[in-house]
Amino acid sequence: MSTAPDLLQALGAYVDPTALGIVAGGTIVAVILRTPTRDLGRAVSAFRVLGRKRFDAAPMLDQIAALGRIARRHGTVALDRTVIADPDVAAAITDIVDARPIPETAAAIIERRRARIERHAAAADVWAAAADVAPAMGMIGTLIGLVRMFTAMNDPATIGGAMAVALLTTLYGAAIASLIAQPIANRLRRRGREEAAERARLEAPLIALAERERPRVQAIREAQAA
Image (cartoon, rainbow, N blue to C red; front, side, top):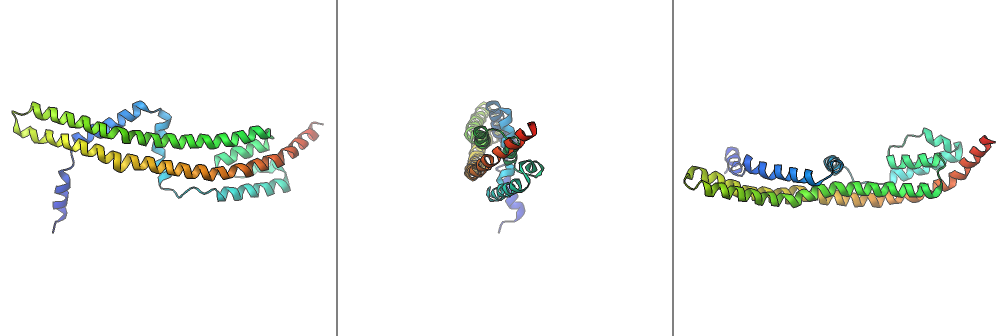
């Protein structure tokens, strides 16, 4: 039966800082060079999304319905004093309180949802790019290891280390792409699609609220102006 030290020793054969530095470092540099800075930040912050539950629009639909009741009883201005956690819903309510024209309000609601979809897609694309680059970095590391091996044929003590770099860089490239970067990209895309579908449910009630409240706000403003 293998003991813990034996297991650690066996795993230690697959750890090589040089090989890991070539693949991981090369992948990071390549992704940074091909990606806008804002998308890099989104890709890193997307880790928070991975641990969350599936996005559900039901609580926001309930809040929109409650906001409609508040506006009916106390006037549209009362919506300004409500606390709305979701920034997209909050922006739509601000447009409604400001009596923004209905077509502009509807277009802004749709545009905010599309912008959010694009941000999610951009974060997933960064991880997909890492999945594309990592195997190439592994191949580059393999070539570096082979060059080191052939240039050290007169020194048998260094051949083993060079061969290890050549083989482990290929392993690391495949592992980073298949076990880390691509699964994260796929999961972010799936989460983005789910959230986009849920947020689409918010558009109709928000537009309906805007259509109902804008004439009242306009009437109040005209009365105040008179």
